[in-house]
Amino acid sequence: MPAAESAAPISLESGAPIERTEPAAESQLGDSEKSSTTYLLRLTFVAGIGGVLFGFDTGVISGVLVAIGDSLGGVELTATQQEVVVSATTFGALFSSLAAGRLADGYGRKPVLCWSAVLFAVSAVWQALAQSFGSLTGGRLLAGVGVGLASMVVPAYLGEVAPEQHRGKIVVADIALVTGGQVLAYIVDSLLFDVKNGWRWMAAFGAIPPIIQLFGLLTLPESPRYLILSSRRQDAQDVLSLIYPYATRTDLVDKVEAVEDSLRAEGAGEGKKEDLRELLGKIWFVRHNRRALIVAVGLQLLQQVTGFNTLMYYSATILELAGFSSNPTRAALCVAFANFICTCIALRLIDRLGRRPMLLFSLAGMVVGLVALALSFKLLSDHISESDATPPANAWASYFCLFSMIAFCSTYAFGMGPLPWLMQAELFSTEVRGLGGGIASAACWLGNLLVSATFLSLVKGISASGAFWLYAALAAAGIAFVFLRVPETAGVPLEEIPALFDSDDLARDE
Image (cartoon, rainbow, N blue to C red; front, side):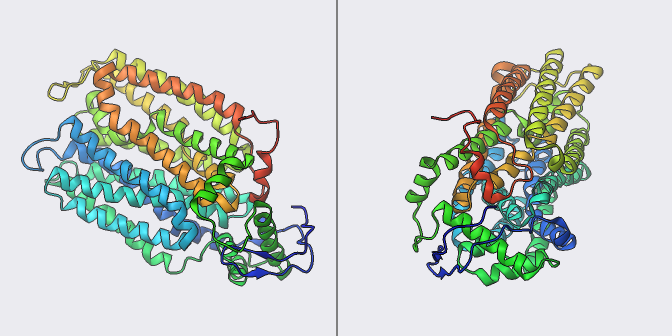
């Protein structure tokens, strides 16, 4: 990036001045030959267990809903109660994701990762021991708090430690771990479906990954960008030396100074900690921050309102209605596995093809998959009531429904699944990244809450076919949003991304 012209001292969040005696040279740490692949893999794996937990929690409830029967008080859950159990996690995630940004900026990325792991472990045991609808809902709500923290902080942390050339792959690796967590959940669901009280073991299994993560977090360093923001310059340089063991001391100093320059340009360095009102003003009234917020929030809402998580939460229920009644979790495993494989493909291509082409292709494929899903349910007897739902016997239509679900989830995983989280970690300037990421994550969970709490009611009101036609229309509208609003960020250093939003080539928001 261009050298800084000013030699004045800057003062970051803690108020300690850092003297600058000469301009900062352009950082060369984007060079992948200077980074440690082994160390980056370890960082990605340990932090990414949060993604596994995120995915497991969204996937395991699908099997729990069809296996729980009358285990809670001798009465089966109604459709409304099922919606409450599912949406409780989303409700908890909505509020914790809003707080996650401020917590990550105030206490660091690593402590928030630790808190989320503890919440996941406690909530898993709580759900496994639940004896009532209210107790189960409380456990799901606590899990949602952990999900909200992890969903915002893990991508932000990985985006901050990754070299520019590998940033897409590393952040999307977390999304691949999310889909891997969903596959794991469906495997556990399938194996325990016919076991007495198997749903309790399904929930209890979720306590294992966070315990593993807590031990791994003992050796995980703090984000170097957070350390610089907190005026811990030498600590940041020490962390960078672990990520880039083949870099010279000059390279490391230049990288630290490049981040300091971006903080100076963003206005950090006033010698005081800004309150929430000041940060909200900067994120909305500074044009590049406002445009970044519109894109990040828009992508997260679009990811949810197109209906993917209805298939994750209710896939076993949907497939049971479509005729897979003996063990619907086995058929649902096919959907989760396709999602995982296509996310891994996206991981390989994301820094090569670019963000915009993958988003546009993904949305177009999702429209096709949703239209096919709507048509398949039109062929099936799809109008549901709480007490009267007889699975249809039309085998070829049932398999057409399953194929349509796989097609939709595969194209979703290729772009709209991972990219909103990746771009959320990229788009915001360092000063407002925590708050901006928190708002975008909250938008994600608001959209998730909307679809998870209304899907069964929507199916009863306008039929399953009508619901998927609605999702298809929203995905089609998303194509226009991406084409007009979303810039290409592949290979662009984080410090230079805000400048993309100052370009008049993007559609104006004024």
